Image (cartoon, rainbow, N blue to C red):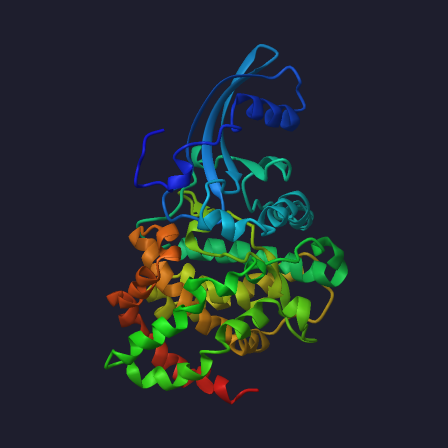
Length: 415
């Protein structure tokens, strides 16, 4: 494989263990055909630089035969980082593969079966061909690219694509809402999330973000009046956000709408085809949480600035309407969620919203520029520069007044 700045550095060369013997073992287990013979394979990087961080991914074109019949298949191989450095250290003790394997082998097949029984054939993700936690943490998927799916990189998602992915999320989360009441044990293995990655909140990109944000708005004539609202959050924003994420496990509320959250619902974690159908990717951070959580995340990591300004309310309504309709279709017997309560629960968890637009939104602007996330996460000066993005500052001129008018900044009055 040739060196190429368009790919993640740790995906330019496959590890030695990823050889034809490994592929043979995986395919034999998948097809249950001991006679299978791997005749050729070609490995390349599976994604563009900046598409992801919490794993290493390769695309493998493999040719094989079964009982003298020849076949070929394109596969995506996902594994943990092995190169020494921040990425390996950061993720070493995480449970991301444990979570994703549970999603593919237990949770998502259950969801699909429930929807099929209700008369709706839906596929959420690529087919998992192989998985193991020992001796390496590895998952293998069928490649969606030859099936006509693509990742959106050089533009924002259009309205049809947004409705497609939010509709699919709503159907998934409606099924989880019902199962949490009927069979909560299905989700027993999903006890981890972004905040449970060891030392996550102590990373520079997290703990320095709000100070960098406050420094930036203090220098901007049109923004500096908002500094007084963020100063009281210096000590508690990350902890309050953590409380929101862990709410179901640690501080469950009686009337809250809890669902299975994707956990990393951004535009690079989904693929679309020409008909705007979508497939979801990367379930390594999935967990049970408030219905608000993925929607707050999507607001900044999926929607365009124009959508955040002009279409957010309509898209939230589309999500909620699909959610309620799906509950009816699958035979949910409890009290139906109400739109007013849904909107209230989103508002009540606004610490998550504030954290996302002060910490993650600058990263989203950087991701669209194609910056290397590995360098950003390890360079404090580069992290500080994120807040000088002119488009980000321009958007804050809309976001901050709107949040003030909606009552977002009453937070410092709360205990």
